Image (cartoon, rainbow, N blue to C red; front, side, top):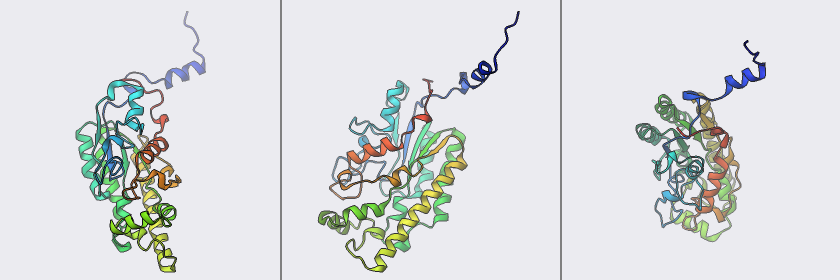
Length: 272
């Protein structure tokens, strides 16, 4: 006699991940982006410190995405690639994406755009349309691989100006290092032209973040945008490097890892 299958049981059978359809913990991950993902100034004087990258780093002090995935399964051990390069803009992202695809990365993090806005002058910022085309090109490279992508929003650089403008050391490093002059030039000025300039640069970053969100949606269900978590986070000077008062230090990298890692992306994931 054949037993009746209840609707609830039938639904459970249909929804349960099995075989090739089960979500798996990635065996290779890659970080794409600029100096932030490269861990620049997180442990040395004006050098990349990939061990403290919020994405692919292996330092316990940061508890990166890589270490969080490693805690879920050993298959990813030692396969934490970092293709982020200090100074990179959105124009460099497609090339980094090709490296990730060639390496077989099943999980990719993207944090790009700060260098598109943080330039010598406001007129040098990347046009929004150009920025979007660069992002789409990179995602088009990754789409055939089926890689899952985590897209982090660009930090609010105006907040950095706000918390650092009254700090003499921050102002000194911003000036002598020519750091993000589109936003940080004349940091103590309250002139209308400087206030308007800062607002326009912030608006450009917000426009970039909107394009990142839309590009992620275009990529499909294998892409997650952080919902503006990085842009909205109230970073303090204690979370940026005392060598430039711009890049996240180890504490800043730790915060980035925490607010961007979405366990739902990997809930129910199993070893391949």
